[in-house]
Image 1 (cartoon, rainbow, N blue to C red):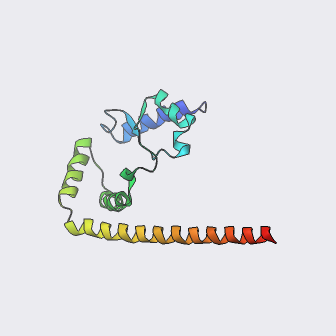
Image 2: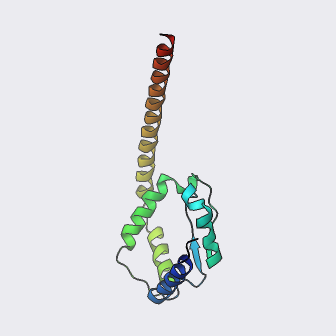
Length: 143
């Protein structure tokens, strides 16, 4: 880990505690998608500095497109709000989730279906292109 990383993490913790008192009562928890850069030894060493890293399988369905619909909407809702305590934040989150309309989730399902169809079409096109290239290579080798 870089020599200044420990000092940087310590300063970050102090800044969060100063700006958001009560937010780090249980310490810092880092969750990432377990992509190669995130799972590198360098990143894993953050644990040495008291940051808990939640285990998370790569390409997990836990990070489905539904999360982006849900979390994007939540981010817009919370934008500009300030909370005195973690309990205030939790209360607002519960209120927001309790007031979500069923149509909110239906919209997400429609979006996911469209995205899946687009991905399937793309994979099919890529497969056809690959097959064409292989055929062209075979023809060139035969000549």
